[in-house]
Length: 113
Image (cartoon, rainbow, N blue to C red):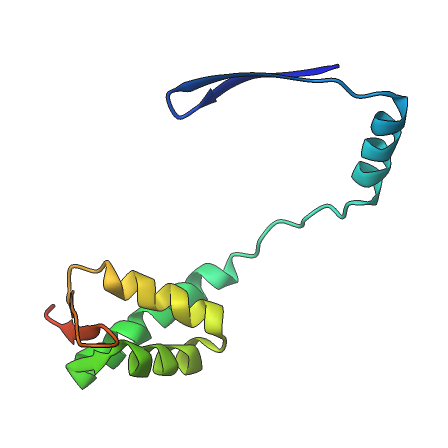
């Protein structure tokens, strides 16, 4: 038996799992087979900040771009789709950027500086 107690947000959690010998054996085998993640390198932090600065510069120079154009350029800047989407979300929540409805896609405008 395995008991887990704690909270999720403000909600109390008290969970009891009953595992037989076969379940414990499978769980142990999975834990032994799972690779141990290595510590992240410090270099990506600098790279992320450089990409963030470049993303802001891109929109600042353009003045205004629709979401699809901006995402396309951010993906090229960042090197992949997921990093481009993270930059787009970060721009969306930046105080230096105004996002307005532009029909099918939002319109991003630089208002900072």
